[in-house]
Length: 427
Image (cartoon, rainbow, N blue to C red):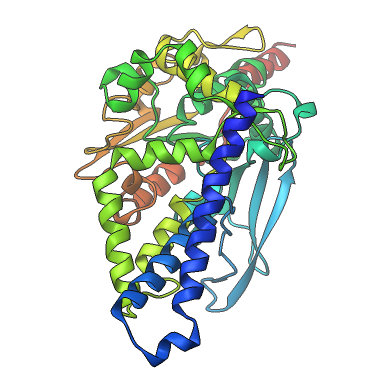
């Protein structure tokens, strides 16, 4: 019960701050105060406005905000978000541009399960939907998943990706962003061994920790420094009675957010101080740069405890992917079994989450893949966010990824399929 009490205490603190902000905003707007103007009231109202909005966003899942799209025919087409595969811990969704011919490129965008919703990739989806049929892994908030739905760890995550790839078929091009990169690589190898005809045509890994020890960062140092017992005691809590997942062990989104903010505390403090000043001067707006960024950044989701703990232990501490020793459902995966799927890695020169060297390590693990099907790119001056959603992505990386996809769009022929043809010919 103590873990549940801690979870509810954090929610109570968030709720109190939201209420304080709403109260200050309402008080400052009280008509009677207009008889005696006071700059302090403007500051109070601005503080209340920014505070209420910030703490309210922490429990709200952002909307994709992709309603229509202007296609090459010059007409606006509506975008329907359809669920292709529905599962307890995450769905496979499709951004269907109604009235448009089906695009030859089919892209599966694997979103991270690392504290934020898949909507963090909104701008990535928007940039790809013009030239492709885009599918995204939409992971659910663990606090809303009943305990009766069971556990969800790195092996379950990998098997979800395997099922999603099977559903989409072998003409798919997969792009994994950040955290899921090693597990997506493992899922591809799993298909190469278990179901070769379901393998995607290409795999692009963006800023992921394939080998966390290749170039240490604060994230990897933390993974080695802390013990699993310490994580279990300090980071894991049970969902409170307010949510459907009551009793489920999670790594709470609010706790993750505190960690995110502390990494760049001075920057965030200045951003909120400046926003309060703009609001007091009447210069802030509903969709200004600050609100657009923090509405997404502050929206966090709880992560299943077993997924968080197994990620730290198996990916960072033990380096099971880096050492090609990853086991899924009792089956030891050999990444070297990938022989037909083209693999490209993308890294940012100034990435302080997955530093250069961590992601490109995937190419050395693909021992059965010809060099002609391997590619890598380091984006000069780019940080972690920029390589999949910023200007670096839009101007440089996206064109390179689409070029790589087009270069590997010819139907792949798995070894198993070739062998079957040879056998038929022999008969």
